[in-house]
Length: 433
Image 1 (cartoon, rainbow, N blue to C red):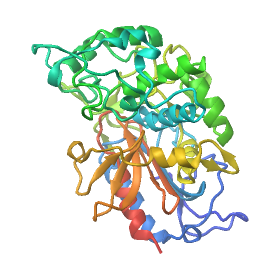
Image 2 (cartoon, rainbow, N blue to C red):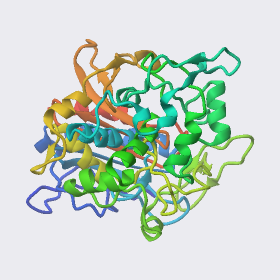
Image 3 (cartoon, rainbow, N blue to C red):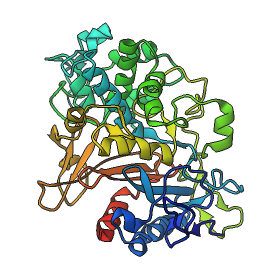
């Protein structure tokens, strides 16, 4: 049974029009019509068709999507339950494990410290964790190769742009023997303290010389640990005090009370592997779920109060409504609702290309990378269409800086590879009036 009810809200009251909004949402966000934002409502409904395509095939357990201009939501839709087979509908306030959608927020926290003179893009990682002062490099991540000494120190900019020489576990994005070693040691490990994680990481060779090439990695987790050293408080506490609280974000955190998770958290699923049977039909919907419950966070549950390390690259648990507020601040060059979180020049720096990552992204147009954000260009490969990032739990967002439009899409499905943000942005472009 489709739980969505189609209706519009205007800013002046409950005047019912014709756009998709989730009946289940408890959102207090201001609502406007698509036309007030400059978009055609019926065209935007193609987003629902796109989302239902993978949902009704049983490939994702749920979805929540919203579009906003200047923080005012002009389209939203949600479908599915927090846990399959239960009557727990997701909405814009549901807590999803955001995975790599944590990275831009951590990057903004770093840049805020740079603004305040507490950090520099040229600061060395070894200034905060001396064990990184003399790293070795295993060329191409091969443990059988002759190791080389690192010719330069890893800097904050190297970490922000994934040119640190670090990598990821094999399960996430690694494909080298060094990545296999990360997997074996379980880096990063939220059950360990930041210092313990950094000590382990510093003993593993890099896969490339610092500053030399883009390798998607645990670099933002490392920056989360750096923020802890510089600010004197854990990453999650720093972000809450300096980014979330000023923006009115109170539901998204690195560590939640268990009661909040019990009430709002979306169970994580993944495709079956190794002959594991899928869940099949559950509940009232005639959908054959091609999924199983994920054990990804079984040791130290993501978002849980027992976590010791706020992983800057993957540990945030948050909602669509909250991410809309953060993204709207970026879209409005650091200021939102009269509150300045970042200077305009800082946001410009974050959204300016530092390197071309087209060869790492399978796309028809050029892709760049700034300080924490991917950059997608229009067909001329010179004009920015939008900035974006996503997470391995099937989450994603885009920010259109020119039109101050943001879009957020969340689901709870590890390695499902059904993220829709690029298709959603295409539909938004098509709907422009």
